[in-house]
Length: 275
Image (cartoon, rainbow, N blue to C red; front, side):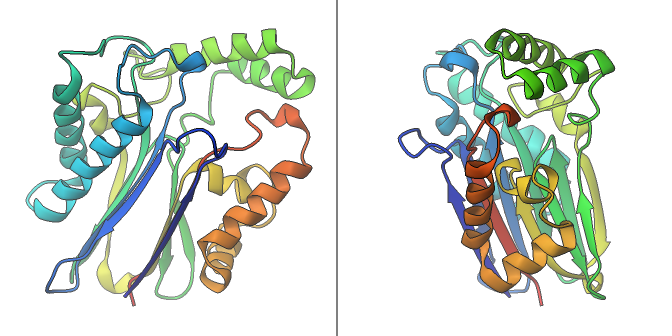
């Protein structure tokens, strides 16, 4: 078994808001991984005195501990408890009802001799390589499948790059995040109930060769810049390593038009070779 991981801030003077970690038991062949992508609030206004890096470190650490130690709980249950623990750690000092309270996308996976389980919430990605080499992306597509009016705003931002258009798009997206009527998309924030909205499932352990977890700052290689498909992305990471993927994304970002949105994003890659 081999685990290789890299995380890099999009803007080095600013703290990285991604989280990545993995655990392997002292005995046996099981393990767990967690990758989070913190949501950057506009103008750093989120009602929290601690900030997004603190939040993802707390949430990620709790989720990894539970995923590794509590095999009697599903990954969704582990995420729910991790969200509750993190909320309890700062509810006395921070406004957890603020619409921009710290939140994150989430990828988690764990494996033992029998099964490989997965969880994906929002727009980070998990690639599962089958024993025959086929690569299956596990994705939560709700953020990409926004209502037509919001998609039109997004397209206008990409076309014009105007700050007024960008602000209108941000407000529209924020109105859909964790919407109680189910019309939008979900991120892990202060409500444990959101864990039930995650994309979850499992595969027989014998059917899985490798796992590759990515925040959207790294999956841009495929989803934004279209430099290759998911199988090509995994092959690149296996051959050249996670840092090479991030370097290639940074090169593409530097060569792209600024209207693509955030020029450089925090990027995280974790490859777990199970065989």
